[in-house]
Image (cartoon, rainbow over all chains, first blue to last red; front, side, top):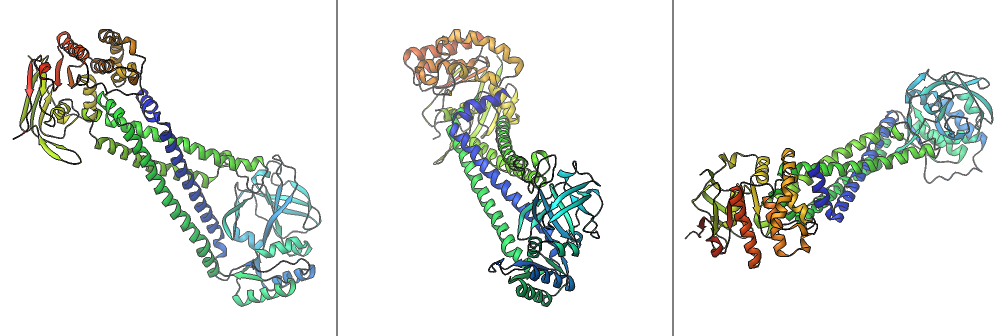
Length: 405
Length: 222
């Protein structure tokens, strides 16, 4: 330890600029590795989640980017006519969320309401930590069974009721907690797979035909945006698209399995490849810069190293010292990345941002830990390359009396 | 007399970026404990290379080397480092100091790598060494603040701090004035007399070389 302290403080860190340069280079390498890994993992999670819509006979609605929403044209009757057409001719999955409501809870979070019909619920196979599956066969004037996120489970255990002013129904309703979702249950955006909404502070409300019929325009219109038709054909969704156009003046596209794959390949797989390749190139460049920085250090300190080798320092001890030094640098950088990530995750709790609040140590979830692990592995690779190159450089100039003269 | 060095070199290839030459061909050397040997010869003949080999700094040669009854080629690098720390002292020119350390830290450098048991004992000796060499006044100075003679004495102090059995000196007085040159040589001879330390010195100074027990002339191969 004494030798390590001596070599690092009296020799290595004597040229502070080189030490700082090394920390910054490693920090850059770690950060890009971390963000790229997390982005890829998150997209992969989103891709797996949406696998259920990438099936034969499944079409996903998407408002055409060139179609303008004119609320003056969209009427209550027209919207209802679309839903009547859907109910009569299609088996469809309905989901919409983002309706914020104030419900007293121990974290003072604003609560997000999500609405889904039975088909959507079956497709998603939500995992519960407590309670039982949702029941969609209920009466609107009675208690509505709901699923809630883990963050609400202390205040509202299974079997308890929540009274809210239901915005989409326009009247007070009583919700009965039927089950608690597993912690960090999430929903990925179909068109931005690495973007997620976490259900830790959500209430998922089952929607049946009566509910939709009694709901306001907001729910119906928002629900239509991502509606998924099941066991259907191209002709049938083309007709549906026409019905929507006729009744609401909106042009909707319905993407088939193949189109979903094409979309994924065109936008996501391609961008993922770019992220991976760019990260790899940057990683190599930063590693080369780090090696260059380390070799400059060795060159400047060659005389000092040689004197130490003359009086009793061995190459094996020097190797150990270099590895400990880079281990400490990596640990510092890893801690910095951990703090940044924890600050972002835990910040959602502090900001009462219910849709992104996650459970874990300081809010860090599985993909964060996995990305940190990848960073550790990349640091091991960088550290080995740098240390072995430094030793090679030192050994290349044999310790001799000549070096000192 | 105890033989401590038995060196038989068939050939040593000296390489640098520009040239590659064969030196020390069929060179044999036997040294007894307590001997004072001067190595002389023109530049490039292999004087420093020979010192590197004797000092366990270089094992890249064709030959055999037995030091204290152990074959140098069979020693592990950590053992070599330990031997350089415990048994061999290097006395070099005054530039062989770490400029960022004080003279005291430079002198104590070998203690850093010594076995913990021996460290206390050697620390006690430190006072005796600096008194004998008369460098107490410069201990807190950095090398760049010292004169050539002061630095040469500091290098000498570092070379003897571990009470080595062999001192290898590579032109330790080359850039010193007469007074300081005499001082360093006397210190080397004092070590030899008091502790029976073997002294092997490379020098260009034939007058000084003649004061040693044995003078080895290295010549270029014809």
